[in-house]
Image 1 (cartoon, each protein chain N blue to C red):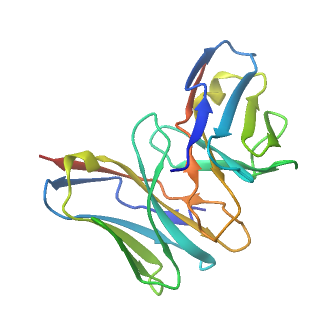
Image 2 (image 1 turned 180 degrees about the horizontal axis):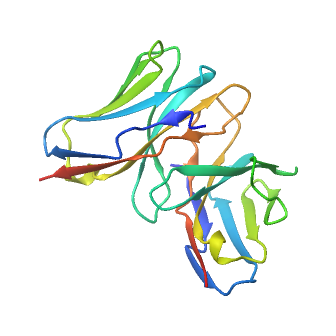
Length: 117
Length: 113
């Protein structure tokens, strides 16, 4: 089946550091990738939608200068948390789809646990 | 504004019995619904989906029912197994937001041996 790889799985870093998270589709071309954030005991909240070769579309309330998204190829999207602070600590998950029939399930990565000290 | 709601944060079921997970939605533009299963520190795994033009979809032990008039869907797992213990999220897609999932809050299912 389709596989999405997310790296790293866990990051601990100092406040003020920028952190890059990679999301790769391993056996299909992902025309669209999504980035979600999950706080403890809460739902997954969509942060942004990323289409290959174009600028990401951010959800309301998400700072695009804080969370930089690049989708340079059909198999790779990156999320960079710039100048991270403790309040950015969370579980970040990417998902990917390729254009096809409506409602096709998104394939998720295993997530990245980000802890800012 | 929570457009997809799972009002039961947890559910406990005996092995072999039926598990019923419920989900309500408010946006009538949703036209596709999905259920995902999630273990801690992992990404969600797709389980089963249903189009809004149907009222039932079955896949092995998993059946999803959709009641459009009530804006309600449910996931039935029968028989339940201890390995089914996880967090279950319902999600919806609709309108012009291609592929954009709106998730419920999740329900923690615990299946006791």
